[in-house]
Length: 224
Image (cartoon, rainbow, N blue to C red):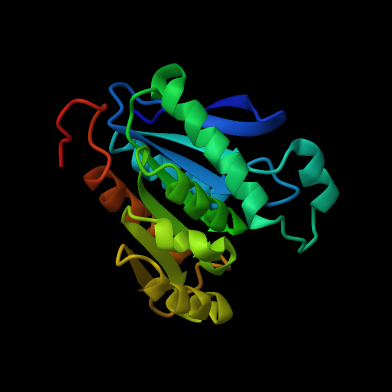
């Protein structure tokens, strides 16, 4: 039976960030989803990927890195928040999950989209002991700057063949990682435009990939 997500708010570094949390019984790990869209509470594509991970008993936490006020202010606009600011928020969230509640002690992964993916990479560089894997979905690794050179966990940079400039950005960024990143291109589709078939393929990729890197609570042997 699929875990029913609960809605909550995380209070970190003086901010209130809306979240959706799904905690299956005997979870093997937790994936924190990060995005920075205005005008929507949660990303429906993230929700589909989270549902796929639930099948593998991976807990999921879907967070908008913008506060409710920021979402309202920037709804329908293309304005991007500074990646360093989003990275600081992502770091605060990883620290909270690592130390509090049912996620404490679980190995963590990050899944980010757009500018949120840049924030995820910054958090992965800053918290290598907790972040064991990163999946960037049509992300902007270029906005993470020099932090990508410090990402030592496995990272998948998922793009669609039809994603044009975003695909090219990810291809250029791949060599900047310390041999830990791999671009995965979905033929003929757009991840950026969230083609339904592409969304399904990304969900399947995440379902098969994250459990191999998130196995068990710290101090015990991961199950692969």
